[in-house]
Length: 75
Ligand SMILES: [Zn+2]
Image (cartoon, rainbow, N blue to C red; front, top):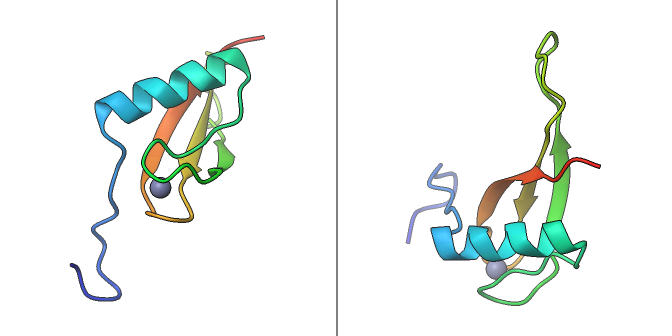
C-alpha cells in the first residue's frame, strides 16, 4: 500500500478498459469492472488547434480509484 500523498494512481487493465469502451459505445452506464460502482467521468478537452474532433473522456472509480482514458465514439 502506498502512503497518503503517493502518486501511484492505479489504472484499469486492458480487459477492464475494453469492457468500458464497449459500454461507452453502446451508451450503457459506465461501471467499474472491479467493484461495480458507477464511475465518475469528465471530458478531456483537446488542445487548441488540434484538427481532429475525436473526444476523449477520463473516468475514475470512486471505490478503487482506478482511472482510464477512453475515446468517445463520434456522433
Ligand atoms: Zn472500482
